[in-house]
Amino acid sequence: MPIQAYPELSEVEVSLQDLAKIYDIYREQRTSRDEWADTLWAELDMGVMEKGMDDYDTRLKKMPKPIKALKPYKKVEEAVVAFSASLPLIQSLKYASRSRSTDDLGELYLGRRALFI
Image (cartoon, rainbow, N blue to C red; front, side):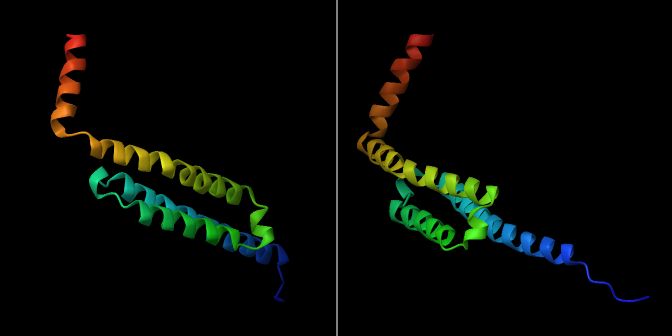
């Protein structure tokens, strides 16, 4: 039986490799976001979050143009940009939560709870 070439298979292989590059970045940034979500507000390091998201954004921008044209690339880019845009809000919430003492929060909670009893 003669050896036969299947050019479609090599095209599929290249496409899968391109998608794997995109998915790797998505998986890594999702893992980072999940770890940050499990961190207490007091222990949250905004510098690490900002640097991490900047690194993911930079890695995405360094991708070749054919990869940037793929729909999964655009979805991952949207997720990274959206989370990066929310970092100032997260920082504001972090510092706002730090300004209230535990007693203030307890009084606030008890006061609101009394409204619903």
